[in-house]
Amino acid sequence: MLNGRYKEAYGTSDSDADSDDDMMPDGYEYDNLLDGTSAGDKYSDFDGDGNPNVHEYFNGTLAGDTLNPDPYCGEGGYCFGESGWLPTNGVIDGTDLTQVKNYLRSAGAAVDYTGVIPPNGDSADLDGSSMVDGGDLTLYKLLLSGQCSGDLTGAATQMNKTLPPGSSITGGGTIEVEVLSSPATNDNPRSGYGVIFWIHSSSTGAGTIYGGDGDTLGFRYDVTGDILSGGKARVYLHVLSGGTIQVNTRIPAEPAKFLPEVPPSGNYEMEFTATQ
View (cartoon, one colour):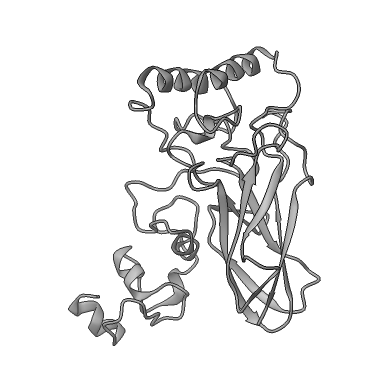
């Protein structure tokens, strides 16, 4: 519920109401120091982390936390293998190796991964064993010495739809995929992969994608979460007009400076269908 000042300003005591029609409930705007009477802050970035306010709402993050802005993780495998030390640079280097050593020495207790998504160290699971262990340490050393040959066993090689449960979604809603390692190794969830979501130009209906961790070339992307939760990326599809809306998902190529062992662009694409 909102306090008296905001109840008077909004004309409602319902924190779930959206008085300014900007897709963010009044309660969320109040809690995050936004203006619930004006839609002008919909696409502004109050906390300066690069993710606009409305996308933070649908992403389940805080738009008003200026002291602890969300970390930057780019699309593709930008955060896969990253240590979480700021600034995150998308490159496996000596700081990442040191971080993994510290993680193993302390069993994860004394290591700060808040600079990466997810913030628990799962992105350092290079071998896909669902834990950070000695196998990952070996791979970090091989990568840095240029001796790693062949695909990393923990790299993303699959993408499965988890929401909606069927082949189509009516009236909009959550679009969700999980990213997995190779079935030839262990089929485990993969963390730290930025999955791009976009509405295909062949769609007969219209909609807007909200949520996710960032934007690339006008498309939204979301970084897969922790392994325990299934390594999932998700966004929200808001349907604007009737018809069929085709939502495509894709894991893009890695920059040449990153890991040549990560699968190339275009291998993993999916599509959803939405109707109103």
